[in-house]
Amino acid sequence: MHIPTLIGSLALTANTAFAAYSIVNNKCHYPVWVSSVQTTRSELQKIQPGDTWSEKQKLAEDGTGVNIQVVTSEDAFGTSKPILNMQYSYGRGLWYSLSSAVGPAFVDEKVRIHNTDGLPVQEIVWIGDHRPENVASYPKGEANLTLELCDDFKRRFKA
Image (cartoon, rainbow, N blue to C red; front, side, top):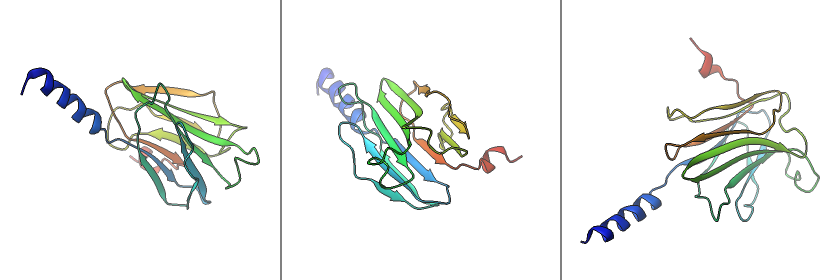
């Protein structure tokens, strides 16, 4: 096998081996609905209290990342209710953010994005208040991103 062919094959293998996930963990005492948007919106999926939703992360498509939208009612998009957005873009590193649209979503709740695999991924945390959009990056490659809704942080702060 020629070296250029080998390098091309390795690059293709690395590109298709991308296996990080976006995860929404619903710790709230009420159901939430989740949709993923890149070039089109996926169907809303209901996530019961204590359940988890996940999807394999996607590479940026023509510069467009992915927006994981979380709402507290099934009709939120038709009635202009608040939307929590976890956005990410993966290309040369992973960029991710947390924002709210159509008013503050998950008011008075603890919400955070973090990595549960021990990677040094910067957490984004909202504790009852909604700051301007928070943006962070993980330039070392792929990483699972977990969005915790109504997080209690118990495991995080135990001695």
